Length: 118
Image (cartoon, rainbow, N blue to C red; front, top):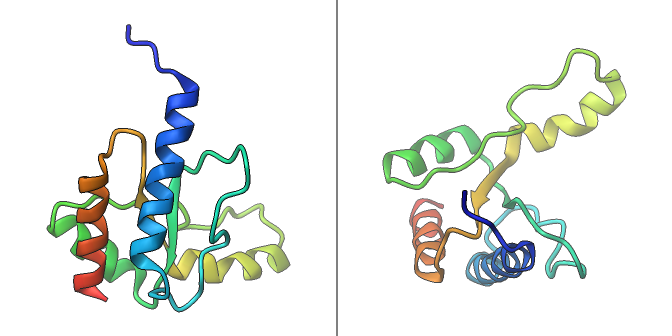
């Protein structure tokens, strides 16, 4: 079993987030929630608001870049007012990979693919 150093994971994800944020700055029709990450935050992905999320998600996959679609469906038990507020996120937020297994060159490939499609 391989042991993962949590500090290394946090550092690498933050580095990848910052690198991707720099490459994609000004591209989204809604800026990400954090221009720079608060201390101690370990991001799971880079959130990018786009007009055509599903189409971008599918085209990125065709080009070999796996994105995440965590917000695809709402939960039926979610209160209607909260569901309405979250619906914009579900419709437009695509989650770009920035995990610790990616090198800066691979993060550049993610950015280049997004830039070529938007």
